[in-house]
Image 1 (cartoon, rainbow, N blue to C red):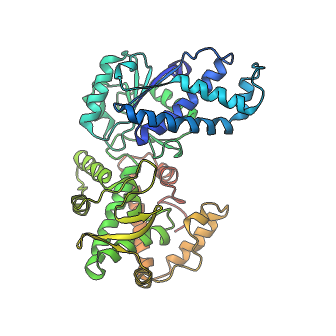
Image 2 (cartoon, helix red, strand yellow):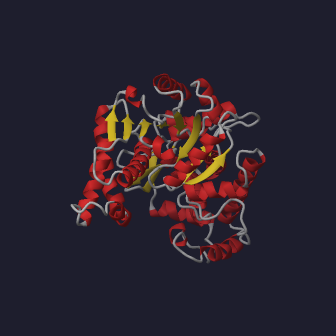
Image 3 (cartoon, helix red, strand yellow):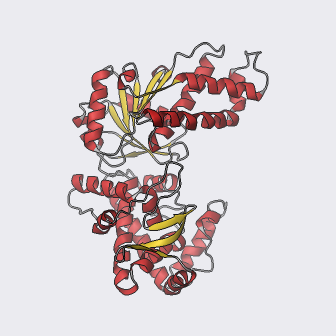
Length: 446
């Protein structure tokens, strides 16, 4: 059934940050199937509609997809050679790779006309995270497509039951939350609603396997697992920073909490760098969504709103480089920190770093940075030794880190108790695959 469904697929918002990665993954699989089913080289009967309203960015999408398809073919040359073994005209690897890429370009159909989706069996929507926009796009597609067409939305926070009801797609919509960038990140959160049939759930699982993704189910509660943890984790970091600001000033406080969450807690980046990566405007949008749909919990940040008001947005440029947010960046490395009170960036000088490090105190002797530990086969043993010492220390850095770790654990417990995650293991799986944490909130390390 899935092979047939993959004969005609559409990606909506295909040229965007998320859509381009989703398009690449689907094109790789659809071209692989086409090569296996049609080694003779007839004109492909498969179509991947790459739908975006901006024709100019669609041109850029093709220039992104082609070299990526070449790399994919190079990595999978043995399987491609086996599938094309009957083609005596294809002798060396370069010819096989060229054949694969040419087939892919025939399958890809860049278009700004949504009516091209009318024959699609599967549609992946990756438009901006705004209910009104998703409703407009999805309901319009439902009018164009067959009643049997199935839809996947890349929503990261809006409940699926809300989206499907608004778009009149009950039972035909699944939340398929890819992480950025989709072509690299292995995690996909899968969110279903009470109306989702088992057959659709099974199909979504099979697609995930084909795309080589780690699938984690999340209950249909705003924010789901990943943003459910990240947003609350970020709010805690902002709260701790604001508490320190009265004593140390905002620039030092931001830098201190960022050091705590990156170094003392052995994470790939500090919480304020992570907020910058996601984008302060995106964080604000997720906050508003979660606050709207989650009862008995206040989820907002006046500080984030004030930063946006000051013109600080974060996010990435089209080439993947980091825009300025809490930090100002050079080659994606923080070089200045924004002081909201003074409305200016303060250089992270050697003296500023030294003051912050003196306040925090020394790291435990067993400390190794995330980048080193992530490649270490004995990382669990080494992290155990580090955290054992950390929890015996009483420096300000250690105390801040311990409190942060315990709060992260509490967030995880609440996600499970609230039924958002099926287990603590699923929370850890999301954080390790989606955020590259080396350990989950609930662990045997501390």
